[in-house]
Image 1 (cartoon, rainbow, N blue to C red):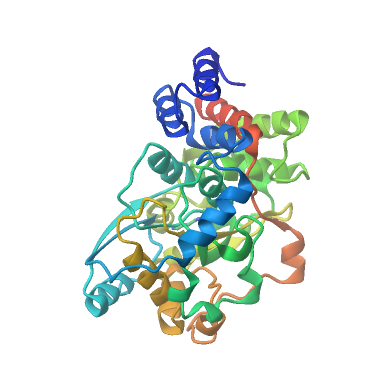
Image 2 (tube, rainbow, N blue to C red):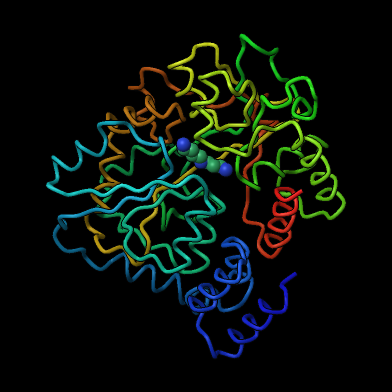
Length: 385
Ligand code: SPD
């Protein structure tokens, strides 16, 4: 539920006295989370950029037909940490004569907060499915010019036309992965259940991701519920479970936990599978398990913000990463699955698509719309408990 200050802002936006971007900027300033703001924007009509869906589709189609100019000499990338092969960017820069700047983030929330606050300098960003829905709903995702993506045919059919971006109008699939438990097999037995995080046995040696969707989602699955639940009773139970596990946790920590798994300071970490694979290169005792109650399968995507200052370079970059050898090198380094069918055939360590048995236990995260605010509130309460 919005508090009084947020309500005032919502009313001001509805009355037209402030625009949607100004609304987002001010709401962020009073501490409303980016995903909540985006949920409110998406729930209001007209959405995001002030256009009705049909008008937006027409604008997007028209934009996608306008030819781009010559390639610019710069490209600004904003990506998750440890999410590209070491030679991907230098090779692109050399071949295309483009100077690349590369900033990193650790969560979808961080990415959305930056874009909603008005950052306009980035040419390509890498949201997960539900965060991409937010960028589309708020009019922040640019339309892609398929004519410049000559390697598009390499994308595996499974990753085409996803529900969060029909027709891939705004996104190129990047990597897919799973959220599970990385563990030190020389220190602990295989963690079969999310419940291991509630046991005192490994207190102080365990972490969960610094990500409300992943943490609350894991405790929803623990009780047999959907990790996209909007049910008050289920969410209250997940909060209790999360708080009871918290006393055993060393921290909420995302990709940077790799160093602590390698050093042995952490023995069990809720983590994304590719980051666990990266850690295993340095410490072979690191293994990975999907808890029996199930977990998240997700896909991240390359998106060009509508405000991208270098749209032609952004398209050349997207087309470049769709080359089989480039896609293979990226996924061989990140440890994640590639959505590029031709790249998969060239990988040294291909990540197989989950088995039917695993798929039965995996679920995609979806945009929670208006309920995002409630999830945010729960996450705040868990972190401050
Ligand atoms: N080191 C890169 C990790 C990317 C994880 N993205 C997926 C998040 C799903 N909640």
